[in-house]
Length: 182
Image (cartoon, rainbow, N blue to C red):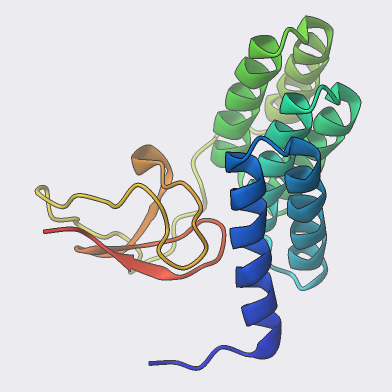
């Protein structure tokens, strides 16, 4: 088993804490924790995890009736996706974020985000992620995923995972490899 550095241990504890605050309905505390983790991930160049952490912070802010802060977190996450040329993910995450804003009755912010997204994606007609040779994984069609990451507790969304082998995925939040359930 690979030993984690102390900073990784702190990040895992913080992720678990944020998830527990979310589960308890303490949305403001969850948002603040997710924001700290996202900022740290971004500073460390963890551009794969940082957007998802900002999106979690945004959901918590929206749940805490803090739409301006939630919108800022959404924009931070989307900006990282744009800056790292992940336009397919930018489009998908943008549409999900627009739906979330509407769900929280933030129509004006949803419209503003739609305009921003349309402008950003207009320059990039090819929306597929940059494909790297050797990354195509044929997953086991019978593979079932756990509902949460066993390391950080984050929810696993089956349509939004990266398969690293036929029977394992990478957590979008902490980067841990998670095996499928037999």
